[in-house]
Amino acid sequence: MNDVSQRNEQVALWALRALWLALPITLGPLLATKLDPVDLPGRSVLSVGLWLLWGLGFFSTLLPRPATLTVVRFGSAALIGLVIFAAGSTLDASLVAGAANVLAALLVSASAPLGGVFVDGVSYGDERRFLLRAPALVATLLRPLALIVGVAGLFTGPWLLANQHLISGLIFLVAGWLLFALVVRSLHQLNRRWVVLVPA
Image (cartoon, rainbow, N blue to C red):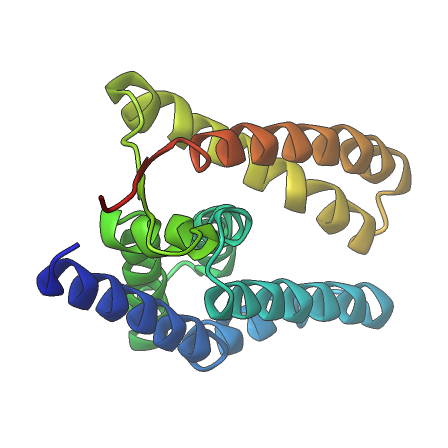
């Protein structure tokens, strides 16, 4: 691997870490405002859940592995859902800042240099692992659809329960989290497709 590739990978990795660190500043106030009308128990549960998800995402940027690549790529897509959820009827500077932060995190997490540094985290000795590109149909259609389904499955049930829709909330919680698990498993399989080069 040449010096340029190494530098690009490190730039992508540190950029993603910085973007995740900035999320509580850029996106946090928007989510707090959106959750404010929710009753206190539901609001507290959702707030703790969001902080746990943020912590998991940031921790994953500190430990580059194929499994944590799945976390940051799904997590970045989930952030888009949170921006849509937090958006009000008017476009203001805070929404623009939050959306820009999230979009940047999504683009960096999907980049080839970032994928390379994460899959190379499980290399042995002098070997070098390169993440394979997903087929065009998967990259342009199936993966985005899977991410939408997974994000909806993750958040719909808890949101309904927080708003005291117990029956529908429980149904969506079980069904949605099953879909979420299937989506994450499928995405992880894509992140485990690599070639290994060993110096002679």
